[in-house]
Length: 286
Image: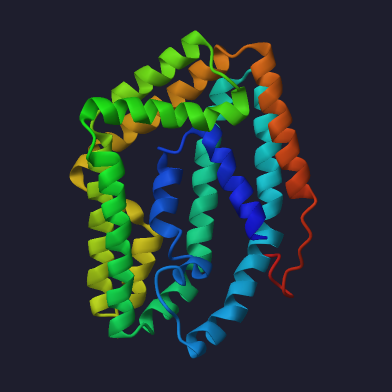
């Protein structure tokens, strides 16, 4: 069932990876129980505790979220067929809701697992995060601002290529304008990421305390509380810029590009619809 989650995440490429969806998963993906092992070596006891909870999360995701994903795809397909770029842009909000449901679902298991980490495991966690942060600095901050903007446009064009093929001249210009409008967003984004990680570090320092559950619930489900001032100030404008880019790209798309995108959505819908899953008794109503 992890495959269907990855397929769903791939759909966000059409809507852009710089939206809140991208931020949420860059912050949350390692906390989802099946990813924590990439950062921390779990003991046999911890792994044994995690296994049945992981299966429950996957069953929930398959039985409860999969039907919603299929509906999301159907709405997107209809919007694309009608060249309704405004409706397609609104799909971002529906996806935000899906990310929030995942965050709520994984919070208890994630909190309990993190509560039981040893001092060495906590140290290992932040060592791995810092290694990742250093790679991000090298990739996104080391180049000049002009290079950052150019690479941002290149990345977006690459994400769009599976959906539209080669962008036409006007679409390319719109992507370049969008990339330029974000300016020094790389620096703001990374600073925001580090601020969230610092809040996590502070929470883990008191993980045996009575307020740890509340701290982790806030970190996972109320991420906006931990936005830096700069990030918060730019959030709405960046979100609007992404929505406007979607509208322009769809509006300027050639018929062959829309047909390509439609076929891609059809393929994803068929693959998701073919998924087989069974939820534990009583789970489907959650």
